[in-house]
Image (cartoon, rainbow, N blue to C red; front, side, top):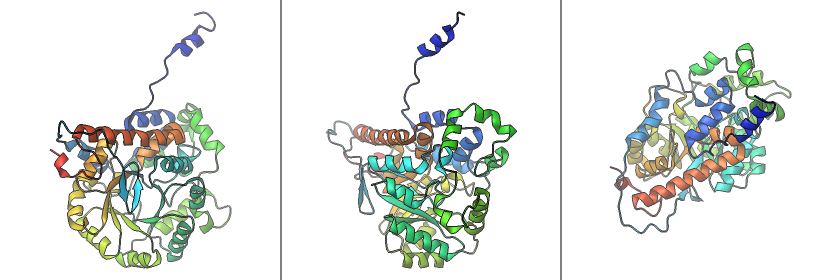
Length: 393
């Protein structure tokens, strides 16, 4: 081959098609991330039975459609806790987004604001509550754990309110961290340690290396003021593990939080009608049906499979939001038809962030909105909010 011929062949190669789905973004992210980071996002607890169940549950639900209906005008939006969202998908809490892109949660929050939907700031976010609020003019919620120290909880709640967060999302299914075997096998640490086993994969992904090196250090941005200055990430992780894991928390602690926070309160991690009833009794405005994306207790059913029971129990008293397994606009419609106000997820914005930063997340939200509009037309329905079980087979 003559000199330069190879480069000419490379230039003639067609560019890959732009992503059109969740799976397209996931494949792009897999090529751009080293295995230990990809598995950290993708993986579930133990044998990942619940992780797989979340996807399979949506695949089992089938539609029935009405024909010859005027669907010229369609509205994919929804009202959640009194606020209009232009797409019925909420960017759910997911921590340490700096691991996949230098702008992390900042990029995702900006994209969510542009799309007209909520971004939920995780307690474990790479950037602080205040940093995220400063770049977003869209609705923000703050996700909270019942930490061992009530003072830590109070300080985080007060900061979320001062930053303009409209609601608190209390996660209740983490008395301790689930066993995530992929992370154990990969030697995953925060921040990632590139040893001999990971070096080759990292070198083959220079873009990821640049994102990791060019941004601020990977840390829990909202927790920096809770630890001594210049605390390293390993010590901060130990602090988080120590303070977060509290096996003594009860519904009385939820009542204390309800008294302290006077805005909307959502409780996330509910998988039974009984717990949903307790949420309402403690003053929750919404219940988030979630098995933590299959990352906590393996062997739980899919979130979608218990949604109906929870809607039957508290649907007239609190809004019910589904979390887990959403990949397509059709999934959002299935969730609504089974009684959910809307749905949320973490991986559905994490993969686009890894693949394309803010533009990637914006594109994914645009895809979901377009999916909903198209599915409404094919179902013979005009609005997302009118959907009920009559669209299901």
